[in-house]
Length: 79
Image 1 (spheres, rainbow, N blue to C red):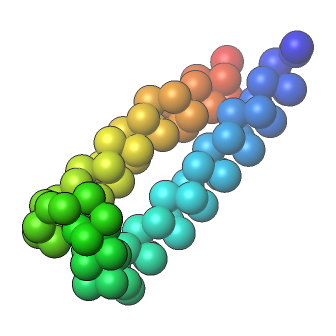
Image 2 (spheres, rainbow, N blue to C red):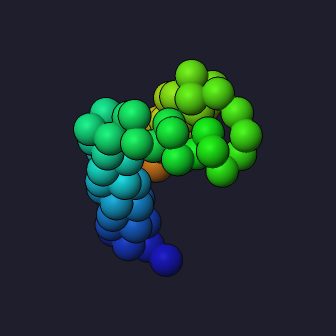
């Protein structure tokens, strides 16, 4: 695999994952009460805990996206 293929791979990985992150964030913001009530009843926890867990998941996903997709893409572009 040469450099151009690696750049393309990381570029598409980053774009797809950014799309997933944006889609999840928009859905969570738009349907916050529905998501919280549904998951609270499924897992037997309070809706506030569901909201906290969802935002924690989004934050973790964003950090992993930056570390494993965006930074390698930028590093390959700089070489």
